[in-house]
Length: 147
Image 1 (cartoon, rainbow, N blue to C red):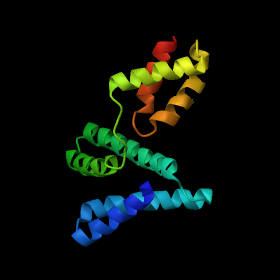
Image 2 (image 1 turned 180 degrees about the vertical axis):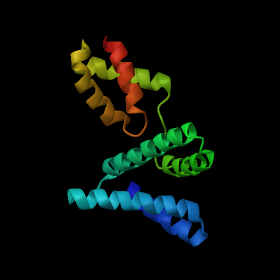
Image 3 (image 1 turned 90 degrees about the vertical axis):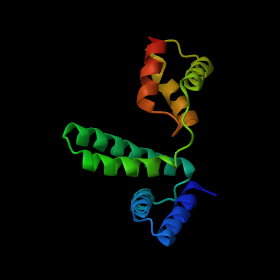
Image 4 (image 1 turned 45 degrees about the vertical axis):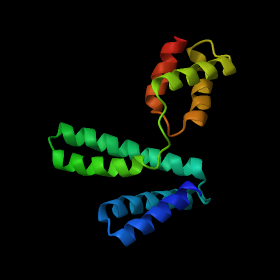
C-alpha cells in the first residue's frame, strides 16, 4: 500500500469515526499532495508524498515556536495536535548512533574530504534518511565532521 493510499484510507476511517480533528489534518494533507501533483502534472510516489509531509511538519513546528513566543499557548496546542497526526505518517526517526554511522558511511562512500564535498554527502544522506532525520541537524553534523 502506498503512503498516499494509506492517507486516503485514514481519511475515510476518520470520517466514519467522526474524528473531526484528524479528518481536518488529513484532508489538508491530501489537498497539499493534490496541489503538488497538479503543479508538477504527475502522480507523487512515496518519496514525493513524504516530502510534502515533511514540509507540513516543518510548517507546524515553526508555527508552534512562533505561537509560544507570542504567548498563544491555545494556538500552539492546536498546531501540536496537528503535528502529532502528521508525524504518524513519517517513518521511524534515526537515533543519534544510527545517524552518525550513516554520515560516516556516506562520507566514506563518496570520498568526501573537505567542506567543499558537503553537497554530494548531503544528497546521498537525504536519499537514505528521507523523513527519518531533520536535515538541518544532519547538515550541522556533516559540516562539523568535514571541517
